[in-house]
Image (cartoon, rainbow over all chains, first blue to last red; front, side):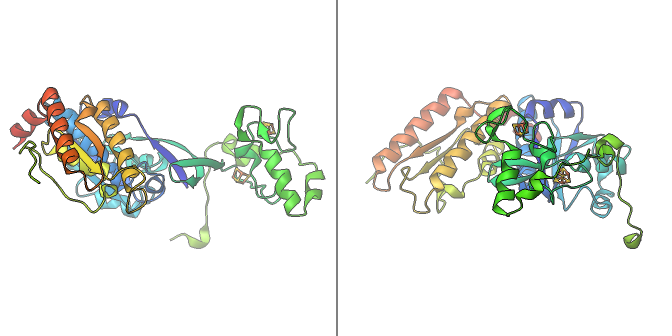
Length: 222
Length: 116
Ligand code: SF4
Ligand code: SF4
């Protein structure tokens, strides 16, 4: 999933300061799971903001709503009849959802309520870690299912580097060395011979380096 | 046993303090309560394993949220006691009442009455 984290409330207060009527808009997918922008977080943030402005003697209309997804036209369409009631929308979806909401409703400012961090996993409740950087050409088959792009600090394809010490990465003694993990996993899989194969230079044009990307599937197009 | 504590305190019974979420605390304040405190079982004694520890974290979170919006975090507190300790319950009630009186009324109250 996409992992995000709510922005500090002071930053959010600044974003909406000039607006009288604001919709706090959550998303039911990834940001709900990582507890940054689901229905519950929308309610807590909206309540806190209302109290903040009430304390300042400002009458603001701060409403709450959570869509199934903000990265899908059909769910965003549900806002159509109400959007004009708001001076702005504060979206708690990931960066994609925030932008799609903004694209759909051109005349309404849409502000980010979260910082979108990475594609990752829930290690345990309250602890999320990165697993993929969407490089566009997955190499997990060669690396024992462990991603050297997102998990090796240097994105090495023929690691480890000389900084790998007792299984930890040189940038942070808490961080597992991705290449140690890869070698350990290949050993468990009886595939250590894969480690001997020199990885060719990766074509980064499928990564962000090739510019903004898209996927076209004529077979499913409507 | 009849024990004295402020009549301003409204008791809301829940099956376990673990049932209380941050939003319940905030909504109580948003509706004009001057303070909110949870009284849970002693740590390690939760009938539902760790409800009171969850409650403690939520209290901490609610306090942090209040501080971040310029309100006193101390309007929200957590107390623990065992079910046989009625005098302790009354003692906590008096302590909370005193603390809230020191802090004064909920600062959103003027806004609330003008909105009504
Ligand atoms: S190799 Fe690329 S696509 Fe595969 S997990 Fe890593 S970043 Fe993601
Ligand atoms: S120590 Fe391991 S994870 Fe860290 S940069 Fe070197 S190879 Fe990559």
